[in-house]
Image 1 (cartoon, one colour):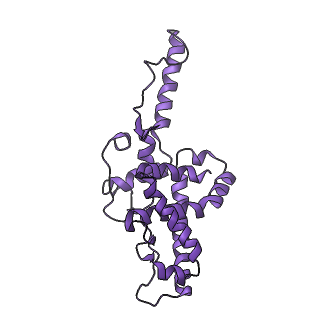
Image 2 (cartoon, one colour):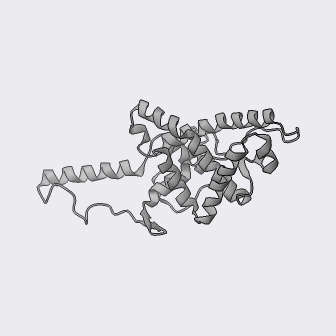
Image 3 (cartoon, rainbow, N blue to C red):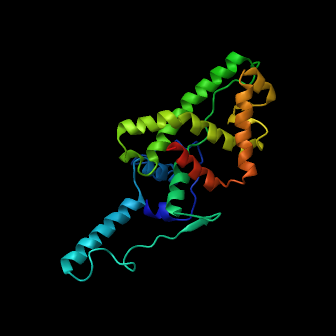
Length: 232
């Protein structure tokens, strides 16, 4: 876990980020194995804090210096800079590892577009994505430390905004914000926006997607903004 989390190598799943990881198949997919470690609450920060605690106890027992570790003794984490903002690379690695994969809506694009068909597919997609939002939130460092009621309240008030924010990013990266990329099998063009009877809402969501391009948001910034959005 330590080598995978601290290493610069980016693991990619050859399937759909849902590989079975057990005692016999744990080496089949390093990407899914690392993601499941994060989902289980494993963090490098906890390991480093334990090491610092042991060092402090050893110093107190020997009486060879102050109770708190000195600058030379404390582990130094390298910092990376994104457009003038410093952040921990380990935290970025966590965000990249736990980012949910692409979810399909199960929409039949061979049938004629209708309000009922589009709304049904959107509802189905929302239910599927909500499962991934909950898993993603629980994998964020520190989220499981919150009271269960607080966890539920945070997800309850943010899940819709998170889905729209992520959809805007997909629209920007996949179709240059020309359409709304809800899912690979559910992309809204102008015609579908009108058919869905949500044209004004669709226009606002498309404007959000265009903002990513105007502001030149990087993938790393998107991941950090999405994590902040959960708690906003």
